[in-house]
Image (cartoon, rainbow, N blue to C red; front, side, top):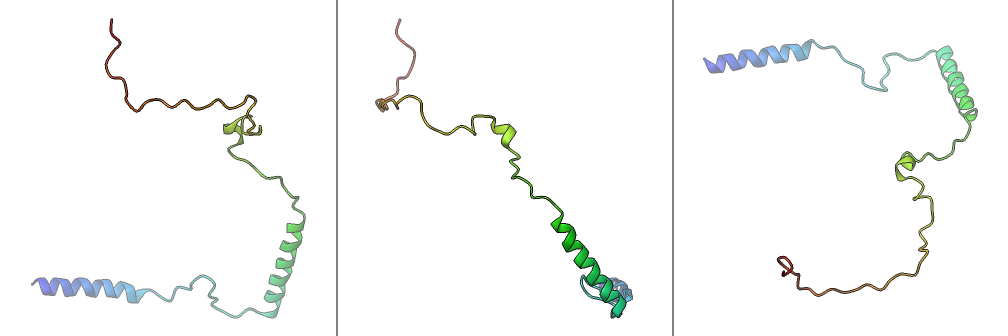
Length: 99
């Protein structure tokens, strides 16, 4: 009984797959273009390229500039000489101070 049910389910799935017509993929054309359509495409492409020349050059955008603040704009030069690093002993003090 299960084999029959599985066979019926596969038949229903296959039927829906066969019912679909050919779906054109991206870039696949269903018919050849006429000369007028080709000329219109070329004209539209040239107009698009000309319109790109009208766009002014824009300055670089720093989206995190406001988050960094003015400190990021300053050079990283220390105003005072660097202090020597003091090396502490590896033994850590534990507990509280004696009374």
